[in-house]
Image (cartoon, rainbow, N blue to C red):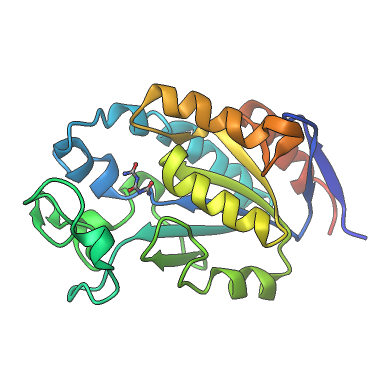
Length: 230
Ligand code: TIU
């Protein structure tokens, strides 16, 4: 029986299970977050995403100290765009589409500077980075195999953006049987209304596809998890 620590959460407490919990960090990439980058070029206020960085850095420290597996994702495509369906490629503003030149290299193309994770939240040795072509982290990736292999059942979900890749990934994970806690101050949206409603939607109807709590609840619980002898 693995030790469990309950996190105060909505709509009910969330069980953090030692050895079965992973921290998922969605798409904290320069293209979405940096001033002058792709996200800002579309008229978005990247400050709304950057405010997630300090609490997320604190959560990283707590998760790593507790021995919780950390999995990072990056949204992006092959340089020849062979994994980008036309329905995705041909959307948006001409000249600011996937594969077009941007301030930090070709937009959302693997290997480009802008595609990579911001320096403040860079993965450390041993952490897994999942490259995903879609919004959900399970679609066309090895994430399911990675989590199954590690015996993971509980996910702490963080990153950007709340109503797009965080939601899609949480819904995919819930359908696959994972219990998902979305950490509210570690997810961000360019749109304040979507941030608020996006979090409401997860925990509505008795937690229709997940739980929600902020770092003031999650970090102390991780500290308690790390103090439990293996
Ligand atoms: N990572 C992620 O959410 N990708 C997006 O395209 N998000 C937007 O909000 N556009």
